[in-house]
Structure formats: structure tokens, C-alpha cells
Length: 317
Length: 218
Image 1 (cartoon, rainbow over the protein chains, first blue to last red):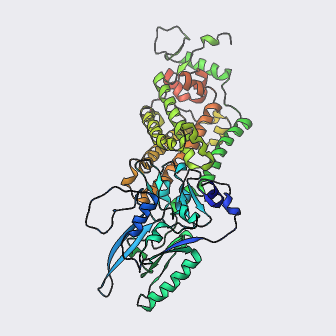
Image 2 (tube, each protein chain N blue to C red):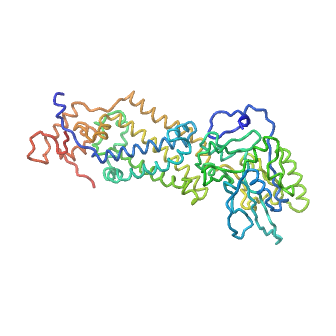
Image 3 (tube, each protein chain N blue to C red):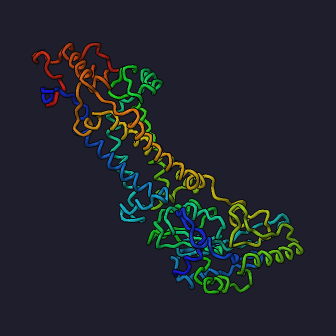
């Protein structure tokens, strides 16, 4: 919807300020995923499919809990399961709802070359606008969480929208509404941090000394946060990044190097122009032609039958 | 000059070499314009020349492949004339005489001067870099075979190689304007004896068997 453009605070491949920077700051939203309450029912996956009208291809059972096997352009959220044997020898079933983390400093947006294909709203949601997407996949290279997927059908990038359409009209995301255990909650980021703090305190009192909130500062914090029993080892949860940040290679590629390279190319052209103005062309004059003629006449001709002083062998009319 | 029509000319580029060169030039211009569209948002509008953003993304890798493929035969045929020799390093050390048009202070130059030879190798290196990195970031067909770290590295390598290539070609284009007669050589194939005498004297002696013939090193 057009009015959403008023709420855009960051816009991909755009060097001027978007309208959102002038908006009143009303705080941001966040989804809190409490892995300690999750039972792995996948109701959130179903709700996501329903609300966004997505139907992934039906795969085959390869003997794992995940279904489907991975995120895709048709599956924007996915329960990932890990069987973890803790130091006491007990099995812990760690279940993490994977999907876009809605970084405050989004690597996808930084890498995107298409103006307005990726935007960040003032409420913190990072959204793909597929009508502007060109399908280059740079967002995949930019993402620290390996989230965006290119559709094989329309070659555009897709990921969780945090139900930006629902949130815009005061509804909670579809996955939140479907969760039967209260593992998923949604609200202002501040409220979610407070709620998480209570959860962490409760978990610590029940023996999970390392329980904590996952809101990684490397990407400026995220608008999807996790409560983890083992916040000291996020990688236990199906490889959740311990210290995610935009890769320095992406920073180099789509950061300072862009204006510097452009300036250097412009400088090269200007250098040529001013060389022309100051030094001028390197031209041949009659003395060069005369010297060449002399050398030709002195040269032993390849073809002895040629007239003396005639054209050289490679002569062209 | 009353006898200018009858002035002899020397053949520098055959029609095949000229065709080849301009095919590379065509490939380069299209690849550079479509690539710059994806490199900097200020140049994204260049994508409109190719039918918009998605079409630019689709066409760019194929244009790049075309440029590389047509580069190969010319590179192969010019390889022998572009090997650096002792006199070339001397030529490069006297770059101030070069840029100030004082060719009388420079060692005699063969078919190509050291600047042209360096350009040749820079182009070759950039083409290889662009091909390898370009395949890695070709999302539609090849990216799925590479890890994210390799893709990120390839993205940087691709941008760096393209940047160097574009700057090198800008210099190449300027040099053709600067050294009068060069453009004609690549458009019509011939140069005047005076041109060869002044800019490529060793080559002049070699093709005309003029005094002090130089033996080709290869």
C-alpha cells in the first residue's frame, strides 16, 4: 500500500534519505521466540503458509524432523530440530523457529543493487518488495543468517515479511496467532525484551544457568529475538550464528568501495582530458615521415625487382 | 603534400584482427554498462538500456562470456608480441618522457610498447578473474555449488577486476585519441611509415628490413 512508503527508514540502493527519517519515532516491534516453550508442532509454519498463501513442493521423508528440508521461496519459516546431549548425559531437544531475523542493520539491504527492492520500516521490519527485485541474489550474499531464497519460477527473492501487512493494520503476525504454547509473542521491542528478561530469570531459577536473550549486537540487534536455554552457545540451535555481523567482504563490496571506485573511474577520464589539454596529442610530422622514407630507401628491399624507393613490401594502396 | 595520396602505408592490423578487436570492444561496452548498473545505485538507470533491472541481471553474464570468448583469439595471436623485455622496463622507468611526448628519449619500441604490453596482461588477468568470480556469483546456474564465503569473496573479486578493467580500458581509449594515427590503424588497418618510425621503430625496422634490423626475440 502506498502509505507504507511514509514509514520507510531505509531503502536499498538509495543514497538519499527516505521519507521515514522524518517520521516521529514511535518505537519498534519485535517477535520473541521462546525456544524453551516450543514443542515443535509447526503450527507457525502452517499459519505462515495460510496467511501468505504459500504452498511448497511436497518433498520426501529423509528421516529428519524438519519438514520441509530447508527454507525456500515458498517456506518463509521453518522449525529446525537439534538433539543435544548435555554434559549430564541427558537428551535435550532444541527446537528453533528459523526465518528472517529483521536485523536493525540488514546485510541484505546493504548488498541489494536494486533501488527499493528491500526496505526497512520505522517499526523495524525489513521487507522485500518483489516488484523491484531483479533476482541477482546479492541479498543472499549479504545476509548473515542465510535466509533469503530466490524463487525458481519468477527468480525473485523471498523471505519472512514479519507479516508487515498484518502489523500495518494492528494485527500480530500469523505465526504468533497460531502458536499454542505461547512460545511466540509479539509486541514492542522494549516489551519483548522485558518479557524475555522474566523468562530468563525463571529459566535460571530452574537450572538453566546460561539462559539468555539472543538479540545480537553485531547486526544492531534484531526484531526477531530468541530466548535460549544455552545463550552462551547459540550454535547448538541448528547452527544459529554466535556473533552475526555483515561480512567485511560485503562491507567492502557494497560500502566504501562503491563511491571510491566511481570517483576513480571519473578521475581516470578527467586525467585523460587534462593530459590532452596540457600536453596534447602525440603527432607525427614531416620529419618523421622523411626519416622513415630515408630508412626505407636505405633498406635492402625484399623484392629486388621493385622500383628503387618504392613502397615497402606490406604496402597498401 | 601533393604526393600524399601516393604515400606508402604499412599494414598494422589485418581485417580479421580489426573485426576481432571491435567485437571485444562491443562486448566490453555492453558488459561494463550492464555491470555498472549493478555496481552503484547512481548508475542503476543504465539497466534501462538492457530492458530493465531483471533483464540486465539476465543478460550481463552472457555478455561477459561473449567478451571473454572473443578476447581469446586476439590474445592468442598477440601473445608473442606482448612479452616484456629489458627495454620495456627502461621505457616504463621513463614514463615522464612518455606522457610528455618526448619519444626521442625512449628506447626503440617493437610492435607494442611497454604500456600496451602491461595493458595486455592486465586485461588478460582481469578477464580470468571476471570469468572465475562471475561463474561463482551467477545465481541462476552456478551459485548453488559454492559456499557463502566463496560467493562473498567472488563478489569482491568480480567488482575489483571490473574496476581495474574499466580503468585500463579508459586509459586505452584515451591513448588511442592521444597518439594520433592509432585509431586509424585499428579502424582501417594501416599506419604511415612516419607513424611506425616514431612510435614503433623496432617494429618498423623489422617489417621493412630497414637498417639495423632487429631480430625478433621469439
